[in-house]
Amino acid sequence: MTEHIFLTGGTGFIGRHLTDVLLKNGFTVTLLVHKKTYQGADHPNLNIVHGDIRHPSPWKHILSNADIVIHAAGSVSEMNFYRYISINTEATMILARECSLHDNIRQFIFISSLSAAGPSEPGNPIREFYPADPVSEYGKSKLMAEGRLLNLATPFSKIIIRPPAVYGPCDNAFLPVFKMAVNRIRLVYNHGISEFSLIHVMDLCNIIVQVILSPRLKQDEIFFVNDGEPMHTLEELFDLMEKITQRKTIPVQVHRLLFGGVFYLAELSGTVMGKTHLLTVDKYRELKQKAWTCHSYKLMDLLDYKINYPLEIGLRDTYTWYRKHHWL
Ligand SMILES: NC(=O)c1ccc[n+]([C@@H]2O[C@H](COP(=O)([O-])OP(=O)(O)OC[C@H]3O[C@@H](n4cnc5c(N)ncnc54)[C@H](OP(=O)(O)O)[C@@H]3O)[C@@H](O)[C@H]2O)c1
Image 1 (cartoon, helix red, strand yellow):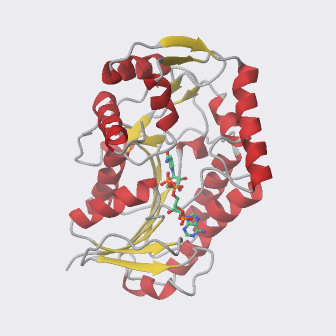
Image 2 (cartoon, rainbow, N blue to C red; image 1 turned 180 degrees about the vertical axis):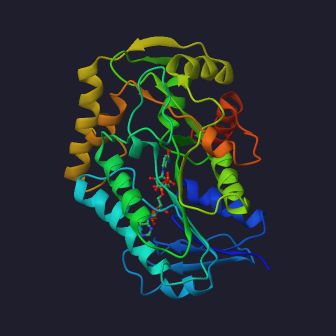
């Protein structure tokens, strides 16, 4: 019999890809869908329940026949700490507490973030045993969720995955970087992020499937993931973009005040319009750090998985998708 997965965040960037990958791997999936308009793909093993994680009544009955819960819902961009806590910390605990009432659930996978661990020292990607020191409200809300989740007594194992920046088809957070390259701009930013880890969304989803299938993951663990390389640089990224787009770029040095100002103004306009913008002051707190890099040995040593999308292949795949769908 196929295992039944209850998935939150299935309508988001990662969740949509994850739903497809889970179905292709033969799982039965029930998606918790927040947006009322979402109908979902037509698949015999896909079920949908509408609701908000913070209000369990409409969805909690599903848990009595779920084997695995994947919690991929969350928010990467909010206007204040309270909202991050509500969506990333409290919602996680509401879900986990409901799950803890069911001993049919064998595994709870929480998609946290590298932001929960905080930035790295330049040239020194972090490992799971390094002390966490988040710099953003987003990262703090994820770290609080991790800590409270691990402290909860549960009949199932809790696997916490901390992805770095995830990119791939359908992602609008990485699109501006491609737009710069297409417009022949090579970003040079000497006051902030210059080293980072990345992962293509398909590798992340396939790794999650391997985590589910692995007989070796039976206890609570935290894992970083990456695309096989712990460290990429802005220079490398734009070199590859030039190759993929076949457009020579011109270096454009951005001043710290201008860079920070853009995020500040974007957040201000979002507040005035009553809309959350991807560019927030909290995001700037992260981008002004020099390095966001992590090693993934701990998980990769346990899984039999080979990365399919090293950076050049992953960027090419994403670029092709953006072009095909007229995002570029
Ligand atoms: N993208 C990245 O680079 C990245 C990197 C590291 C970690 N992560 C983490 O990975 C997870 C997924 O990220 P993503 O990029 O796919 O985000 P996303 O595209 O913004 O999707 C977030 C999902 O969460 C759902 N959601 C939000 N609040 C909810 C609520 N109260 N009840 C039920 N569902 C709710 C959203 O549904 P609605 O749209 O209907 O509200 C959406 O399906 C997040 O937890 C994020 O922190 C992402």
